Length: 282
Ligand SMILES: Cc1ncc(C[n+]2csc(CCOP(=O)(O)OP(=O)(O)O)c2C)c(N)n1
Image 1 (cartoon, rainbow, N blue to C red):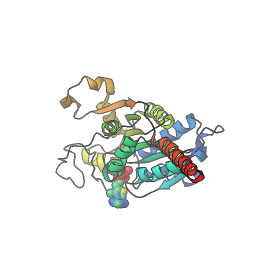
Image 2: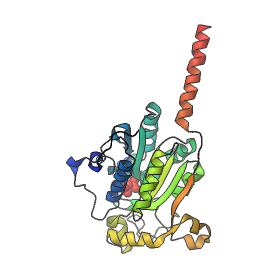
Image 3: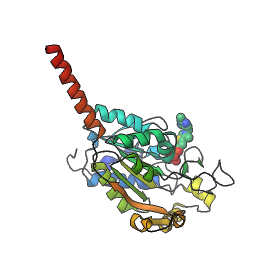
Image 4: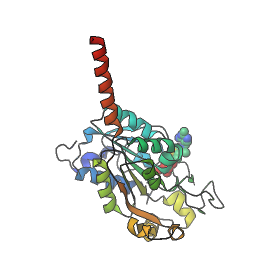
C-alpha cells in the first residue's frame, strides 16, 4: 500500500486550488489533516479510492484529493465504497462525508457496514447541521439549538454517532474536533492502517449556518468553543450523564480485532468455486 515517498502537494489537485470552502470552515482543516496523515504513512495515492456523498464536506476528497474519487449520491457513499472494496480488496477505500450524509439519510448503511466490519475508513465531518443546503436541523444537532428548520429551538435529542458505531460492531472508533489537529492526524493514521471498519467522528465548524445562529460568527470562535467543551474519554467515564450534556467526548472509543467481511466473503467464494469444480469433475 505504501509507495515511493510523496511530497504533500502530490496528494492535492493544485490546479483547482485555492479551495472554495467558506472562510473559517472546518473542511479545509480536515483536508489539511487528511493529506498530512496520508503523507506521514507514505501511502500511494494510486492505491487509494476516496468516496464521498453530497455536501460541503464531500468536497474534501473530491475534487481536492489526488486519488481516484467517487463523488456519489447523498447518503450512499458507504454503499458505493462497499462495492469498490469487494471488487478491489487490494485498494485502501476511504469515505469522507457529512453527518447528514453518513448519520442521517445514510444511517442504515453506516450501522450495517460497522456490523459487518467491512474494511473501510469512514471520516464523518460533523458540523451539526446540513451545511450545503442552508443549515437545516440534522440528527446530530444539539438540543435547543436554532437552525433554519428549528427556528425556535431543536427538541430532538442528537445521535451520539461514534458511540452508535461502537455498539454496531466497528473495529476502531474515535472522536476528535478540528481543534485537535495532531490527535486527529494520529487517529486518521490509525484508522487507515486498521483492518476492519474504522470510523472517526470529526466535530467541525460551520460559521455560516451553525455559528451565526449561535452568536459564534467566526471559525476561531467555534474552535475556542470546541476546546472548552471537549472532555477526554477517560475523564468522561467518571462524570454523571447530566454533566456531559453540553460536552464533546474526545479520544479513542474502541480498538479491537474482529473478522473482516470482505476477506471472509472472498474465502467463502473460493470455497464455493472449489466445491463446484470438484462436483463437475466428479
Ligand atoms: C436524496 C437526496 N436528498 C436530499 C438532497 C439535498 N441535499 C444535498 S446536500 C444535503 C445535506 C448536506 O449535509 P451534510 O451531509 O451534513 O454535509 P455538509 O454540507 O454539512 O458538509 C442535502 C439534504 C440530495 N442531494 N439528495
